[in-house]
Length: 170
Figure (tube, rainbow, N blue to C red):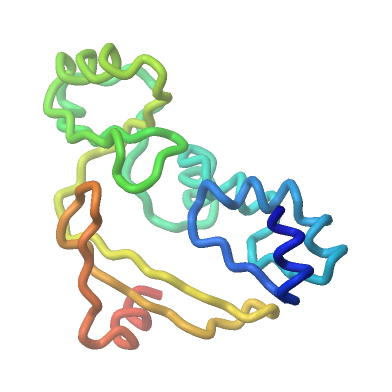
């Protein structure tokens, strides 16, 4: 068991690096705390919010953070092209640029098990930012990157002047 390893090797904290691990560690948070191992994970509410793209989009809108237009009603032909992605997905898996209503039907039929989020297609450079904070939520490290390619193996590049980017982004 992982808890046995933590006890035996006197591990004081764990930093999960994969989204899928967050729910596991959240469910077992108390067990790890009892053996003196701190889990570096967000609150249960934050995990649920950030893993659900619809909830996160609404959170952003309610806090005046710009997001692509999200479609909840029936789409009109002039709404296309759109971008679709799984509501709970990650890593660009099963994401598609959809040029027409016919293509949307095709993807929905090909993947009936997926609850797709439908958003306006935005063609622009994509940036991502990794932020690591201390126990008081003060940033320790901020690493902004520009995504150059979306594939099974995501390719990114570090920005030359990350402090300028972070300041302008905020």
